[in-house]
Length: 310
Length: 155
Image (cartoon, rainbow over all chains, first blue to last red):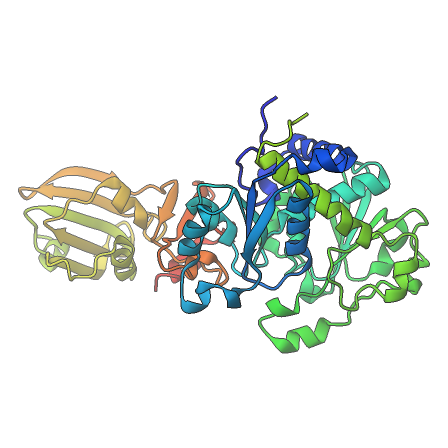
């Protein structure tokens, strides 16, 4: 079987098929089942270069931990302030330079389309770790893997996505990916934070309903996916003030949720999931983050062709 | 001699772009990248009476024979335009404009957060997904775009 991930850019979940997603999840399962020696032998001597021009802790650390867990190493910059882009260097020039230092480039950048541009320039594969308000495809991969592991399936589920649907790039990657499955999606957001209309064309096959309040739908959901309000992407601080506390998942909401529902969040959270929810058995967001490392390790191993596709 | 012919003299060799929607001639020049600094004679006639369009603009570019892939750049701005390639005072080729598969460097992506607007060395790239429905998309940021927002981007 040919490996569709080998030396491939990962820019958008729209570029993927369901078979490829299955293949990635299968590789993730295999990596999780390996002993440490087996894992460490996968990508020994391989180098990941991360370029994070926007702040991040978990995604960057998750990639570093993933690469370390399969025997590779990581180099990179963790903020735009450390880079020559502060001196006026273009993204294109930066990519051309680091392309020769590594096997895979992982890019986070505040502009939409930045990863696609980087992939056009680099000869080595590029992973989009967040491009403006556009996409964050590896987050969607780990979201789906979490749903699969925690619910046993993806098809047939009722999935509620709550919060900042306008600016949250994880939501777009997740919706494009969910369009490959037979699921009912319920989008819950205040009117100011509803999904960007121009993105709906890529979700034609998806059953989507929109709601103003989580109360309208919470008792029917299998998955409650909550997102942070992306304060940094609001063009106007007043707009942010209007919506900043507009939804909170707390005991009151969870009292109405199904007993077998799961609560996910791409993290970091601010106050949209109350801290006391952490101790509820339905809260799975920290487990989600832990799966993320393994999904990213599998993705890297496949891109480097260190693990055979099955 | 018709009023139209009186307004704009015949050219010996070059390209005549006729049936441009009235008022769009300057946008057409911008889309073609013609600034006037090239040195050749460029004649622009605006709001010329026209049987077909009521009013139209006409551009005559002397000494330059524009190929179809150049003139197709104006298909969004002036979809009814006709291109006449003239040599020795005769029209040697007459063609319409057609939407190309993509526009490179013609329009700016109207999404201010698109990378194509911030990288100096990058030319914008607008894909035409559906020529009949004029479905357009920025290749970089993947936003679906309206013809009107693209046209206003080159004002």
